[in-house]
Image (cartoon, rainbow, N blue to C red; front, side, top):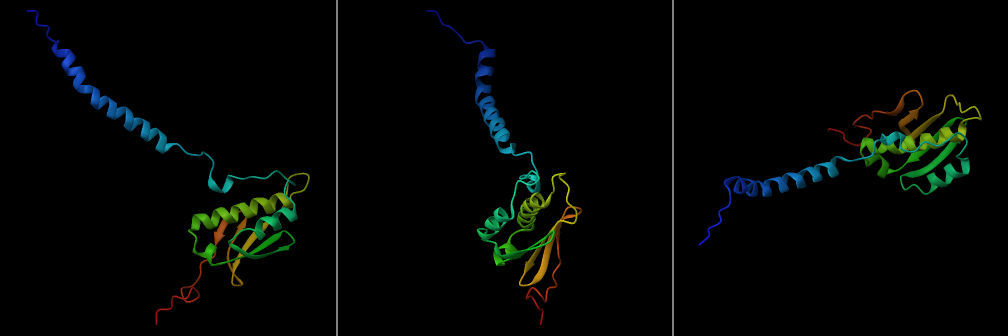
Length: 153
């Protein structure tokens, strides 16, 4: 009888196959999980100068569920927000303010692409809670605990 035996090296390689498969699957999952967009959130939407009209801004703010009202005041856009915006995480607040600023800045830029003193002021119940300027970006206004309804006594 011919007895064919597998070499010892073949047994070692066949034992590594499940481990190698597991490593390949883990590498693919890691690659897929770490992929993402390369643009920062506040710069995700930039509008060319003059590409946004006041009517487009009004329409956008009218249909934004976080906005109660808004008004144009020269180079200042005042946005009155509701409780949904106040309860949102700071990053979501900054992203919304950045989007409003980018639209407002585009509407206010001249043909030379320059605009000075543009800002978006965010108010809640008449009090300023934050603003976005070209020089400083988003700046939340710190509220006192008593003003937020969290009095200690």
